[in-house]
Length: 129
Image (cartoon, rainbow, N blue to C red):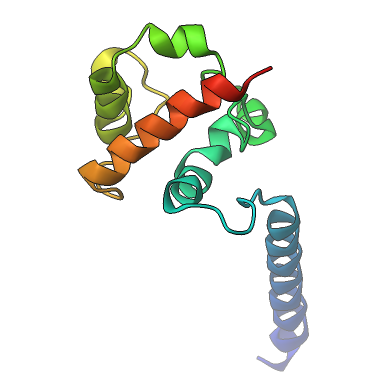
């Protein structure tokens, strides 16, 4: 039993070190909304920016996993879809409409929050130069 204490301690220490380093790296690379952001901007940052990026053009995290999220700054692309379509896509996810990579957020957000997010997405397309 005494012989196992040192290797076990080294292993636990290494696991703790890797965990701290991974958390620190994630904290450094995390995208946060600007100070004074609205509730909708904070929700976009929390639920959407991981894949779509804070600017709506896509995130490096999505690219790491070979995911190509839609460009939310493409106003023409967004105009092709109704508000109800975007609402359903956010609430129920993409699987029901043939876009299985898009997760559902209806459990995390109220219908009112999702409607506000759809409006925010429309404004993202208007900001594109």
